[in-house]
Image 1: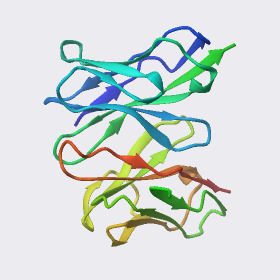
Image 2 (image 1 turned 90 degrees about the vertical axis):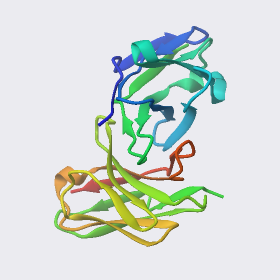
Image 3 (image 1 turned 180 degrees about the vertical axis):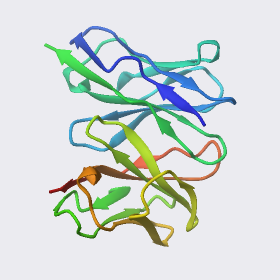
Length: 113
Length: 114
């Protein structure tokens, strides 16, 4: 079965600084890849997804992610972080056939003033 | 209109009780899911229902049983609640078509077992 690793449990960045959250996946075929964000006490909101095509995908709230097959990675980036971006971020990989989506352990983002 | 709604948002109960969490989606999706998020924020899929058929059943205790009266609803019944069942439970839904199977999540139900 597919799996996801998010190496960073907690990241702190200053407001206005750039951000990169790492995600590595394991899957034998072409993966479906997702980033979700969870604000405190809230559900999960989809930031962006990769199914096929252009390996650089744009999402909501100014986020983007790049699929690199050679590195089995799907890192999330944002050029300038806002205080409201403080949240838990989850990378997920989906199975093409049966919707079996597996989540990483999450990365908690703290934004310093 | 909320796309995926769960009730209740909070549930506090005693050990040994039986409880249910309801989930409804108005997106016209044909697949619904239940996830458990533990205290460390780890999300694990519990069940998946496609057109009222169970298609994924992870290694969850049989005290947990999903019930789908129709395509728009997937309720979670939990019998004989245990302390370890305390968690946040998320419902989600998606289309089953490859390329369209983006999962949309409810706001979660925080279950506390005392």
